[in-house]
Length: 130
Image (cartoon, rainbow, N blue to C red; front, side, top):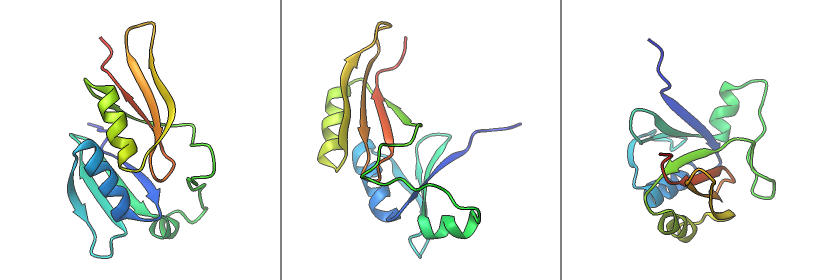
């Protein structure tokens, strides 16, 4: 059996990144290394994990593109559902996120908004699709 188990975001500051997601979305810390270069948050069956850029570089010898706050975000997103998009977007902004696309109502009835986290990763905050 194959399971989608985790997503790892490569970041400069693992502790700060984990704090943003903990304080914004309420996820609990599952694990963080004593060196503070890798950590995981409990988000359900799939963990949201963070690795320092230096740790990632030691594993990915061919290199990778890092997220930089002065650039547009990558062509991928993390998605979080909520019953109150407005309140969660406001909380995220208070915790250091930047509004990227304002709240919109889709033709199928879903409310969506896009923010950039403090590391420039794109996050969709939305209602469930019914």
